[in-house]
Image (cartoon, rainbow, N blue to C red; front, side, top):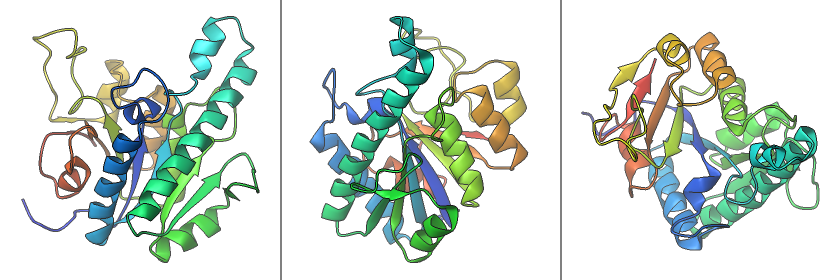
Length: 238
């Protein structure tokens, strides 16, 4: 494949679990630094990068609900966790020598900027890495849905979902040795087969706005830049 990136502006969805490293809980600084280095590699190729980060390494709204918490309260706690992750990622990105801004859907003026679409676009145009925190700012919506929403609002050419596996499989490859990886899928196939790529709201949003979703393993160093050049292992949802 070519050495040039296939996209001008992309959104990277990074799960909270991806920041765990080998830990059971919290933020692994080494892992965050590696992800920041991957973002720099993409940035150096001339790609405008924005990021949505999950909060599952600190608190998951759905697990709080399972333990008897009110769903809205649990989801808001999950959103707060994403802000902590976003600040950690911002720090790592800036240590790589890039400018970065955290924009939160829940205003927290002491630590980051409020999310304003046109301001976010301006930051991207100026070559800054923009990290969107606090999901959509609403309970009952996942950070996957926030990623699809922000990708649409920012007019991104692609949404890249960095996970712990190198694509979409017909069943969990960590539990089933005979799991098959898909090269390409359509948004409709993902919905019809209930494949756990992202939740249905996120897939529908991406489909309506013709945004391809590329699912790859963020655990492999340099994988983000390789996928942008259409190299390496990934599944494309188009």
